Amino acid sequence: MFFEGNAHKFGNDINTDYIISGKYKFKTLDMVELASHVMEDLDPDFSSKVTPGDFIVAGTNFGCGSSREQAPLVIKYARVSAVLAKSFARIFYRNAINTGLPVVECDTDLINEGDVLEVDLSQGFVKNKSSGVSIPIKPLPGVMIKILNDGGLSAHFKKYGDFNF
Image (cartoon, rainbow, N blue to C red; front, side, top):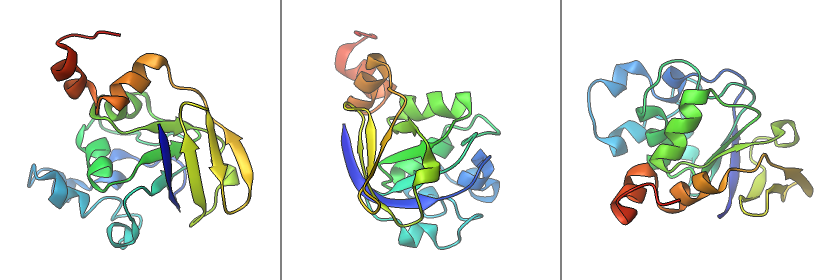
């Protein structure tokens, strides 16, 4: 899995309510509509700045807070290719994999807002094309790569009828 795009940088402890505000997530199930409000409380212009393939980059504990599947889904529907962070809240991490959103643990101090990044999950690195730095990533287990390649856990089950790892 290989991705290329621009970095949109946020800080530590980005909770699920920052990802998609409660004032929206209970009004509609339309993920395209919800994606137009992704990260809005932290950056009101985020949905108009993000382009398909871009990355959300954060510090520690990304996705903390409530266990809402809408959080990784709205990121995916905003056409963000992956979230890069120093660490993730456990339930967000698992929800992201299950919905087909790649999550990458790495040293995000070496990434600035607007940097052009290449992420290669199979080779295990992030290349910051803006600075020339190569950043190793914590490798994803093969089973998670397979789920991501299939588009998420539901798509994997539809394809194979069971876990088939």
